[in-house]
Structures are given as C-alpha cells and as structure tokens.
Amino acid sequence: MKEYVCSVCGYVYSEAEGYPDDGIAPGIAWADVPDDFVCPACGVGKDMFEDA
Image (cartoon, rainbow, N blue to C red; front, side, top):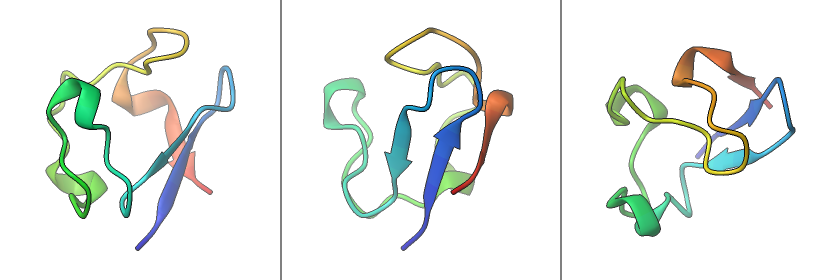
C-alpha cells in the first residue's frame, strides 16, 4: 500500500489507513479516492497530493 503527501501542508494519506472520517475505508487505493477529496488538514484538492 502506498502513501500520498499533501504538497501544501504535509498531511499524509495512507492507503492502508484510508480516511474513515470522510467515508474512505482502509485499503482504498488513491486512484479510487473521489476526485472531490480535500486535504483534511488544509483543504486543498486531491491534485495537490504527491507520491510519498
């Protein structure tokens, strides 16, 4: 499983952990995260995340 980091604030999305607070279950691949996902720490869009 991979991790993706927000290029603005450094928040890390882990595919292994998901983001259950927003309905994204553990094990969800980044490609399957909805395009309208926003960083829970700073609010920028999914396009601002990079491979960790």
